[in-house]
Image: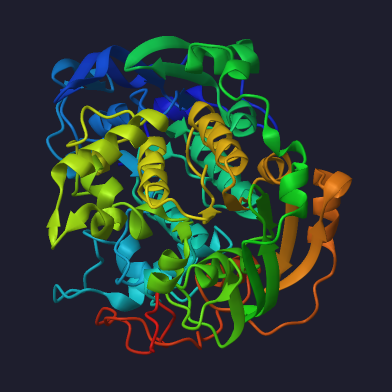
Length: 580
């Protein structure tokens, strides 16, 4: 559905470095009036009103569990409100399914990529609205042509016939954005759209947002990144504990006040003084608990070497495509290696596999919690104890009493907000899902904890809590490997930083050298020529370089692609089993 002409007339193109100042307040295009929503044991929304004006970019913020996701799902037809009503263009509407909301002109980009991994890029973009020939058959030629044109506007040159799961998370997010834009919407809802993107892709996203705004399309923008909000948004609505706290012009709301309204308290009280400023003498002089040397995998890793000491937070830095995620998976036994050695507690792992790594005390919190972490259909309790079931069983029978004791301890310690341990984890906010994953691995009492983007897509309050928890775990003697795309988070949270480039170690920062300036210097140094990489991060890097996609050379992924991908080369899947 095309945006209303009135909306286009009332809106002005956004400036590149700040929000717009419209001459007159545009009329509402989407409203939620007195909306309430309850789930068993919890009130998700309590008499919340929300107004999206025509042609504006409206920020929706709040801590995890504040009700942002529930409000979005009501606006997009996933949930129906228990009380209150929705209005679209001034008329009351009731969406029973997301498809009805989409037909009405409301398109959504979710924080977690919500596409079909085994389908091609083109099939995902045109899913449910495929172009047809005169005979009623799918017009693949037209679909591929239009997909290539659409992706070209985002700087992506990947083959439209390529299966989605062979692309990196950042590129998948751009495909999801392209799908939302391709639907002629009057409202676009963006839930943490930059959480998987690198800076260059973020700039492309902002350019697209500017184009949408210029066309009179209204946007709801959910993000925990303050710089983004103040750069592109006009107004802001703050939710806390399911209630409306504030709605107003963002330019009149200071950052400190905004964060305080989100948290209901001063930010300084959330995070204690970090212990990660410099490692204690015991951590600095202790023998490494984990040592990795010569980790190699064709096209992915090239002789990576690092060590971790008890009580230390080691940062692993690098741009997307540098091999950070592959290094973490290799240490956890989830990525088979061509060569290299891993030693834990002075004992070499003879057979590097996930099971061997877990037995040795290595736990991995993956980057993509939806695809590789949580089991959405299981309860919070079942997700937490999933890895610990062998320890909680006797003669093959699992003790429910011991389960409940473990779950109770970690729900309190990590402050997991849920109606009860039996609530499905898929119903929780992103931050609470991340805490559930942390609880799963912490209940195994690991010696080494590998954290791949642990604060991705969570708000400032939950982020501060996770950072504090990392400090506390290190203070208790746990060795932590921290991967983050945010330089500030690495510098503030790590004792040392190992920087990767093209799958190899490019440098190491210690002591007073752990600064953003020094880290940027290492990242910006000219990289040696290396063969094209494949894998989870490399596909995104290839797209960003705007070069034709190289043919993946890893083992074929499990399962076949759709019928319209006859010439697709095999690509590396998300995880391979140890062939031994």
